[in-house]
Image (cartoon, rainbow, N blue to C red; front, top):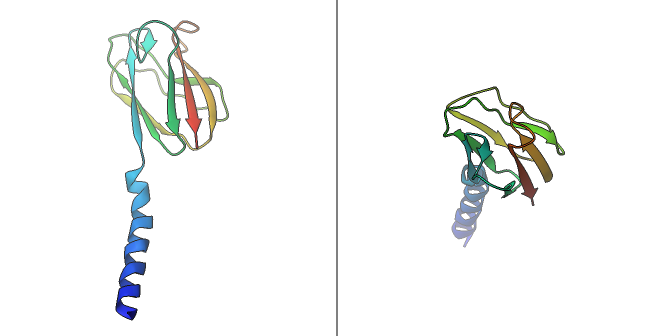
Length: 112
């Protein structure tokens, strides 16, 4: 019985330590003058602790900049590549490309 209890405790500890490795990721497309898709302002909803990666798909220079939200962050100007941010604070973020604002924007909603 004691060996079974020790084995269960080790298994539980391993599961707790593995949780960060299972953290969610979400990809957001950065097209020429839009995030996600052309048209109205998109809202992307993720859970707290999610790694959000913006992937440049167009040819023009853009960036990712929070203009309103619980935490501010900003990428450099890019025309290719990615920018990632792990969001740890709940709330709604308004994100724009500072070159193409106010037309190029999105909302990022971070929940529990």
